[in-house]
Figure 1 (cartoon, rainbow, N blue to C red):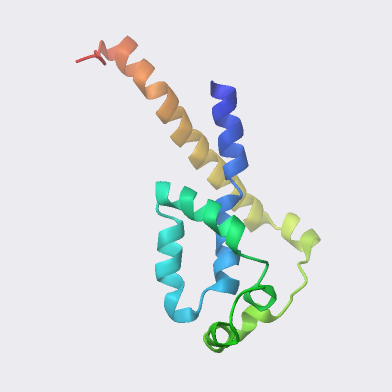
Figure 2: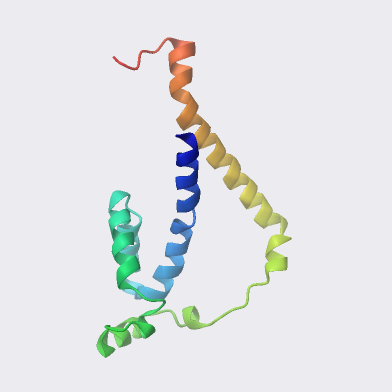
Length: 134
């Protein structure tokens, strides 16, 4: 069971950060907060994700059924910097101490949270004689 849970969380770990990239391309400035809150709101995010995988393309400009007016609306209300393609200097990123500090802090915070989630019930039962069935 723990292995399945770990695999599920590992597979889902890329979804949350990648949604930011999706919204930067698809959402007009005035609608970003509404669309992002829908996508990040728990169980509805699962149904939204399934729909999104079947309905979207890489960008609104390549979508086969979107109208010219809709593309123009999105383009007029988009940050122009989003369309610019920057190259990522991976060596600079991977050798940056602040980046590794953030990775370490994030890993430790998640580790502590998951240890608490999985071990707290056992601690309550064994150390404090807490009865779960009551």
